[in-house]
Amino acid sequence: MKKIISILLISSAFICSAQNADDALRYSNIVPLGTAKFSSMAGAMGALGADFSAMTINPAGLAIYRTNQISFSPVWSKSKVKSKYNDISTTATKSKLKLSNIGFASVFPTGNETGCKSINFSAAYNQTGNLYRNATIIGYNNSSSLLDGKVVDFDNYRDDKNIFNQANLFIYDSIENAYYNDYEMAGGLYGSEQTKSIRSNGNIGEYNFALGANFNDAFYIGGSINIIHINYEQTQKYTETPDEENGLDLFNFEYTEYFQTIGTGVNLKLGLIYWLNDNIRFGAAFHTPTIVDMSDDYYSNIESAVWYNDGKSDYISYTKPPRSGDTYDWHLTMPAKFIGSVALVSPKIGMLNVDCEVIDYSGATLEDDEGYDDDFDDVNNQISDIYKTAVNLRIGGELSLKALALRAGFGFYGSPYVSSHKNSSANKYVYSIGAGWRSQNAFIDLGYTLATYEENHFMYDSDDAISKLKSKQGNIIFTLGFKF
Image (tube, rainbow, N blue to C red; front, side, top):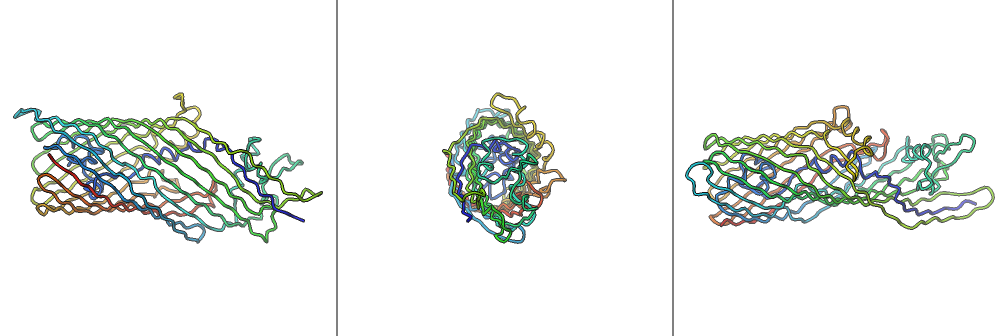
């Protein structure tokens, strides 16, 4: 008589899979948020300035302030991910209320009629990346299994702590001196329901400390020191249930990977804005590479059910090693950015700004805690092979109706993947609208942004386990500010 073995295994055998090429992209390929004005113009303010979040693009915008200012911006975000895996569609949502921006700026006039007319200082926090997302993928696969790659890895590197082997998911062939999974032992008799849930939480925040100088109300320069804080947590849970009619010993298994990353980094930003005349403005900015110290906590676990009979007796064996976690400290260098901007301004009509941003994602690197990248040679080579230089374009405008302003914007973020990659067309698109009211001493802004993104997601390392993910993230931002 057959019975079911229920095995619960928890291990730190994640083997540093939390550090991979995805990390180089996750924290740098982002759509910035911030104040409601900035967001409702799709972040296209590089040649306009006088906004706390605009200074994350071009710090020279600080020098355009004429009065002291303080503002506060909460944001409500909602993400929606629709997945399609082998003709089965599933939708998952997630929402969150966070702080998008807070900051103040001080203006120090020099008293000069020509030359440097003022020196300005600001300190601000901006949420530069929203990492909240839920996704659920469900489908039927009759040609492969997660266990295919796992058993090959174990056969090549026979680690006694391998949780898949401890969960009785591999079968040893003493004649071949090799390990196989149940599908292979059944002659490739695949067919299973596969489910994957991805639960992500976190954000990227930037603490910005900037100085700017105004020369003759026409030439503005600025620079900032920026402290980057990353807090990201992800749980991926994968379940596979073979068809009962296939007669496999394997009944089902559930594999969970969890990791949390906390990082602190720094970069410098330099910028300038030139007013050719009252109506035409140009801007340029350079962001140095961002160097981040990262610390990961991670673990993986398996819960499996297998029909078991050793030929002599039927029994249920339980293996429950104590849950153990592990940490790993490492360094991430995110690539530099170059931004060029042009703006058309009419005090009575409004303004229009266009930003062009260039970033080479293949220049990202990972290093261990001692500053060496030898342990990450394979990852860094993969980064160079699959990522490329991308161009991001943002356009935003404001229509002035005396004290009231109406705004709209559009952003295009080019795919960071090379043309041969399955995500080579994974561009991001941002649509935004908003409005604002201003008096002599206060202002109120409201903005809405919608970011859309489509990608191919691998359930596991196999070309026939690709799902389509369509992500939408909406953000409602409110800003209250005062001038004094």
